[in-house]
Each structure stands twice: as structure tokens, then as C-alpha cells.
Length: 311
Image (cartoon, helix red, strand yellow):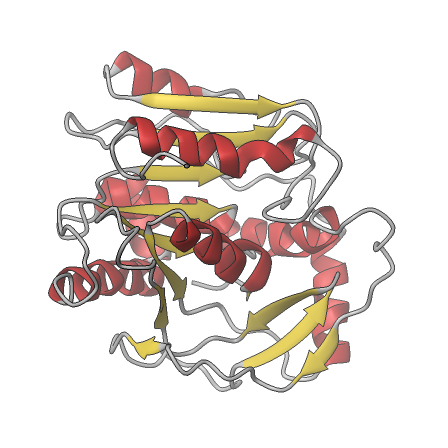
């Protein structure tokens, strides 16, 4: 996958996302290596090691949040609701990071906890990533170098290209859906009500899973500050939720073809364009109205019968 225009563009996006996602006043926060956190609930997806990988997985802290990189074997971590509150719906959560890192806390665990608190079973997907330098200084320098070229946006997410360029990640997403369906009774999940939410690169993976996978078949999807280029919409495309900030440096100025195509196909779509928020706001407690995206998403899930009304 390395060496292609798509991969280079997403690498640039990874670097920019780390800066744009930072809470106010934290722009100078450095990447600090940390020990691999304990993940007692993580389940290996069995999709194998990333082909050609030589650098092992490692973790770091930045902007008060936790990230991982060089993921070579995919896992899925369940966050299950109180059985008395469970709605029966489930969501695969795909963090972003330009396929170079994963924002495991801000776009993963925190999202999953919020969903579980509202009765929706959530599963954080730690999918395989493109390799980055082993040592932190070299990694930080590589990210800075890639950040210098962020004027180039990732290209239109053509399904054929996505299926080729994102083959390992797509296999991980399909395995995640298969695992949740296989253990649906144990986890009190309706196999027909499993959706997917993705952030930035995770949103691209969510779209790729929806448009190219014959097995996953998400019941609903959410694209949170991900690509909005026009695509061919399947006749049975799932309901789509989109949240984006108007000052997003990557996806706010390229048109809203995805929304238009979903509407033209007469498929359900809800689009929230926030005045400010930048890229990568996730669950950070910012002062911008973009922080309200999760409440809007929860109301949308409730409207579609996936989440119980608050009360």
C-alpha cells in the first residue's frame, strides 16, 4: 500500500489530524511513548499479521489522549451496556489517524463508553496500520515532514481503489462484523442491527466497508469528519449520519457529493455542518458546537430504533 498517492495523502492527513484534534492550548504537546495499556477485553480477530511488517506495535500519549501505531494484528474490544438497558443494537467503532496511527481514546474508547451508557453495544476496532519508524524521534520527524504536504487532500474514495488499497483494513472490518454476529446471543445483540461509525480515516474505512463488502452489510453508518466525495450509492445503502466542521482543512471545501448522492438514491441521510471544530474533534470537550455531534448522533440512532430514548 505504501508509495501510492492515496497512501501518501492519508499519511499527511494523519499528521495534520494530530494537530487539528488538539484541545485549545495544547498545540505544543509532544508525543510521549507509553507502555502498551492492558486490554483484557480485546479479542484477536484472526486476520493475520500485516504483510511485510517489521516494526512492532507501540503506544504514545499526546494532547492528553492515547494513540497507537504500527498495529500489525487486529483486535476488537467490546464495551457492553447494562443488560437492563441494552437496546439490541451494536456499533463497530473505527478510530482515525490516516492509517498511520489510531486515536484509540478520543475516537475509540470514549465513543464506545458513551454508546454503552446509552444501551448500545460498542466494539472498538484496532485495525492494522501502515508501518512508521520504530523510534519516536524518527516517527515524530516523519509526521512533521508529512504534515508539510497536507495541502493535497485524499483522492475520491473510488470503491475499486479502496478495495485494493485498504485490503487489510477491510478484512479487519469484515472480521469484526462476523465476530459480533457470531457472538450476538452472548452479547445481547440483534445481528441485523449492527452499524459502524468511523472518524477521518476510520470514516473512509466505514465507507469502504459499506461500498465494497458483501459480508459486512452494516445496518447504519456514521461518517465523522471523513471524505464526502460523491460515490455510487447501492440501492440498499444503509442510513447515513455525517458530522463535519466548516473549518475542517481537509473535507469542508471539496463539496458534499456523498450527501447529494445518498439523497438522490432516496436513502436516509442526516448531515450536521458545524461552524467550527477543525478536524479530529471527536470526544474532546471543545467550546465549539461540534462537541454536540454525539448527542445528535444519539438522537438519530433513537429515531431509527437503534437506541432507547434518554430517561
